[in-house]
Length: 203
DNA sequence: GAGTAACG
DNA sequence: CGCG
Image (cartoon, rainbow, N blue to C red; front, side, top):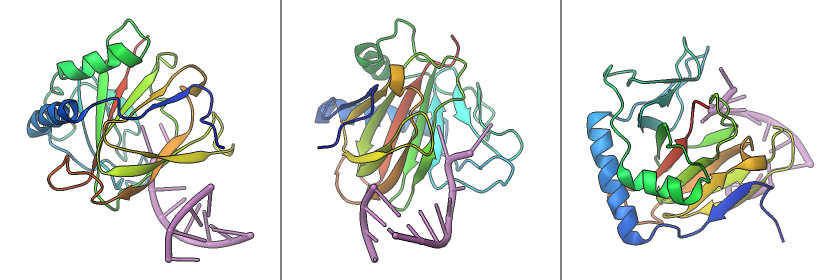
């Protein structure tokens, strides 16, 4: 019987179908204004398999020259990120345990062959407030471990409407996406998986 | 560095 | 070959 690492909370089915549809509609608007693009690894410039955009005051970006960082504008359009949809603020309020509003929502789109290697969310100045992650569309195999890269990890499936909270001891847990299960959801017409990650950046 | 590959 |  395997147990989630301390501070990692998985809430299956947190969003019902109609909430999920509302969220997809809101993200459609975000993407229309701030198009998905493919970020690059620092130094090597190797593109990630995941496509990204953001909403909220700040967005997480990475490229060859600048590395991982938060900035207020879309790297390609130069425009400020679109505002965060109200539904995301509601979800944050319900599960984050924080009184402050989230400053950033990273939108990750996974096609069937996209992956995300094991990593920590540690580019925020605020490393105490929880990180909230929302899954929409196709299921994935999610992996999570502890604060050290070489520690023990475990994996479990995330489905559309699930929420994961990395808080307290889990805030700096290594995590990643091993695989996408194609055609496991009808939420997104063209398939794939959307992950929305809400974060506080400044203390 | 959120990358890959390889190994058991 | 897939999984960890």
